[in-house]
Structures are given as C-alpha cells and as structure tokens.
Length: 395
Image (cartoon, rainbow, N blue to C red; front, side, top):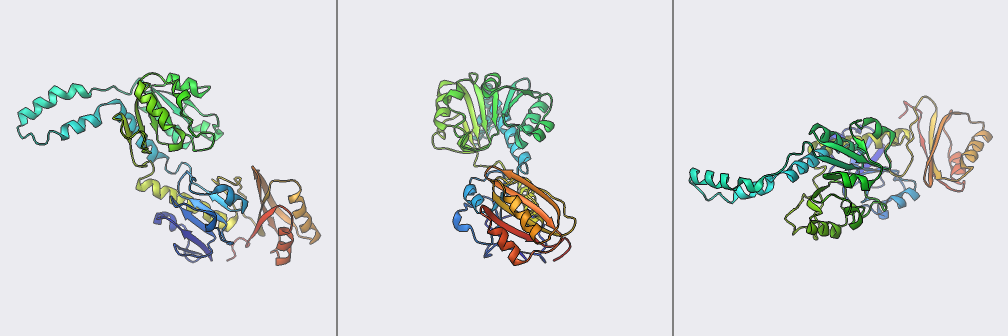
C-alpha cells in the first residue's frame, strides 16, 4: 500500500488517479511515500525516511528546498504546461486592457451611478469618451521573452490578434522549437527584442540567473512608451527599476500578477493577486498531471518532469526492477553490475542517466533481490538510495 500525503487542496480529478485499493491518501498521513503540494512551504523537517517523491501541482518550485531534497534522493516533480492556457488567457486580457482605456472608462462610468436622467448620462458619456481612446493591438509588435509552454502560446496568441511577434529564448528546447510558429521572428538577444517590441511579455523561470533580469540597464533598451507584462515570476523584475521607467515614460504601463509595495501607487500599474493559474481547469490539469507522474514513479520508477533528477522511462516487460540513485561519479554502476555478476543474477534491461550532481538507474533483473543484496548495494560509497519494484502484475 502506497501512502500519499496532501498538504494543499488537490483537485479530486487528480487524486482519483490513485486506485484506493493500492493507495492511502490524506492530509494526516505519517511516513508517506510521496507528498503532493501546491503552495505549502516545505522544509527539511518534512522529510521522513519513507519519502521518495514530492509532486508540485504547478510549475514553480520556490516553496520546495530542492537541493536538500536532492541530497536525500527525493525526486521533485512539477507540471510544466498544465496551466499554460490559463496564464495565456490572463496575458491576453492584460494585453487588451493595456492598449485601450477600458479600466479608466469603467471607473468613470461607475462614478456616474447617481445620474438618473438618461439624456444627461448620455451627454456625459459622449463628452468624455475621447479621454479613454486607445490603440488597436493589431499591427503592433509583441516581444516574448521565454518561449516555453506558456511563452509559445502567448506568441501564437499575438499572431492570431494580427500582431508582429518577436521572441528570444537562450535555452529553447527542441520540443519548444517544434511547436513555435515559423511566423515568430527569433531575435539574437534580449536587447534586440526589447528595442523592437511595443509590448514585452515575460515568460522565464525564477532562477538565480534571472533574478532582476529586467533592471535599469535592460529597460534602457525598451522603446519609449512600451508596455511590460509580467505573468511569470515577481523576482525577475527589479521594482525600483520599473518605478523609474514609469516615471520617465520609458514604460507607459506595467501589468503584472505580483503586487509589490513599490508600485501600488502608480496609476499606470495594474496588478492582479497571482491569478495566473487560478482557474478550475488549470488546477485540475495540474493535479491530474502530477498524480500520473508520481504514480508512475512509485509503481515503475519512471521519472518525467522532475526538476532535480534526469528524465528516465523504461518500459516494464519482465523481471524485478531496481531503481538506484547515486552521486554522479564514476564506477558506481560498474560496482553494482559486479555484485549481480558475483551472484549469477542476469540483467534483463537497464537505463542510466545523469543530471548535474546526481545519476539515476533503472535495472530490471531476472529475480527478486534479497535483503543482503540491497545492503551490499547501499554500502557502495556515493549510492544515495535503492528501491525495489515487484514484477509487473504482482501486488
């Protein structure tokens, strides 16, 4: 029986992916095999000897101390792309609101609620509507910084709205490149993107290398009167630099999903309370995706969409499976295979991959290992952990 602990409200559509005859799921479970989390802040105190995986129902893992969990051999999963459409739609709303006087116009009309004479009301509306005139987005240039799951959808949205779209992503994956429209003009660097775009939309992760990526120097490359949209992460912009750009007119408007004290007093700043993934559909998509990933890991050792371990998928055929995590140093796998050879154990299939400082191995052998074999493997220096999976079809 696998034990899965939930530390936030996880959609039932995700939890229902775990068969109840094989899984115990709840908020008060002790010694869990896995933890499912959304925004709950985890710490090393949440690590128990039984914990093998953490599933984050969302993309960001800032609430998880990933390096410490990696040292313990705990795989941290996330759900990139599961909430991409929700974020894209919020970016589209911000894009349209930033180009027209919609927000100010609505506020103006609300202030007329005391007027009861239709003729007077109509006259006031007609006389003031010119104050809220805006511009169409069609024909303008949208710059998308970061062309992953969300950024590529935002780029496609811009094309559908009749915009010219330019993009830049120094870490563009092959998968992302395939789904990106050929109509998106790839820029050679951030500076060229900023100097070309009328509207810049940010879609990069929060990393040490992206902290305050949008700073005073970066903003100096923007067109005068540009619009900046940040529905990625708060940390990637320097709020003081944004304030300066708004004061000088370098930025005409700043829309974001992360309110900060430095910017709340600006009339041309519109901040939403972290609504990017706040849709029923996004929460369900994230829950289903993370549940499937954690389930496949617990039952088969396969890893997909981990932020700290390599992606490893090996089809189950026959025999018993071992999953071995170790520090990424030479000769460990050779020592493990020597142990099998000394015991006349045949290896049916195997897969070995590494990522940074860790390596991960799936090894299918022809028999179920006894406790002494596992102890011998664990005794190898730099082996982090080893887990056994029953033969496929066994309970």
